[in-house]
Length: 307
Image (cartoon, rainbow, N blue to C red; front, side, top):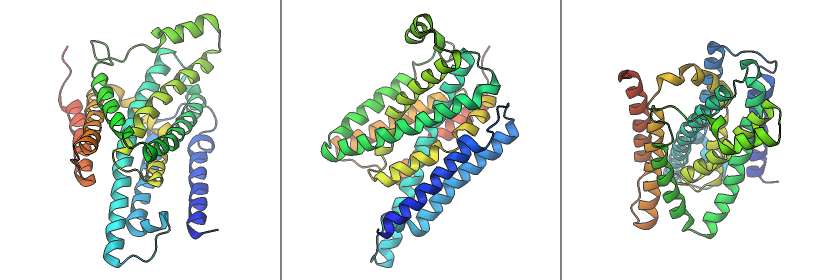
């Protein structure tokens, strides 16, 4: 077995262990998670993701088992692969935040007892992992065979970004998920237990966000390893981040707008590169993405809501 294969097996075992800690071992007993506890674990998982960035910056060649590069080439390769990962991670984390907001709305709409959040989140996040990885492998295969698929992805992201602006009610609040026709049909005819119905609704939202997130990461890189790890580290800590954002949901009123601009920018970037051969560098993309998110958060804090 090659050193690259051994490295990947070892790293996947480590990732699986981290997911087990995030989803099963920590807070396995049903209880209401405190803000302090959620903040601590959110910091742990973000720190873990940044440690992987440092690893790529220092030894990124191990990811593909690359050897024999000159020092200058090796340094350039490490910088490129680490920057792609960091940009991809930031995009996927931002989209994960919107996924969490939808989960919060679902929980509130179905009046889920906070003591049951952990159980429902376990299956919801596990579903998000499965959906994203299924779309990763399918997307990579499509792009490798049909390059024009990237244009379709770009147009889809622009459409989704614009649609995000109109995805809320006139007062800016999310639409009540219980008014969804499919949800009402299931409640009326299938008589599922309430928690199972909540899980199914969350799984359906996972599919939607997987459809958004995979084309978005393809705007940064087509490297399947970078796509994989940027997604897995973005999903790590989703449970703890849920409890953090549930306490601050009303304070970031413009984050949804920022995410809409973010998706539109990523789609335009893909179209510019694919159709007009106008590339936007990864470093510039990272700066624009950070700027969009920072402005939307700052606006949420500074601009006071009107009565």
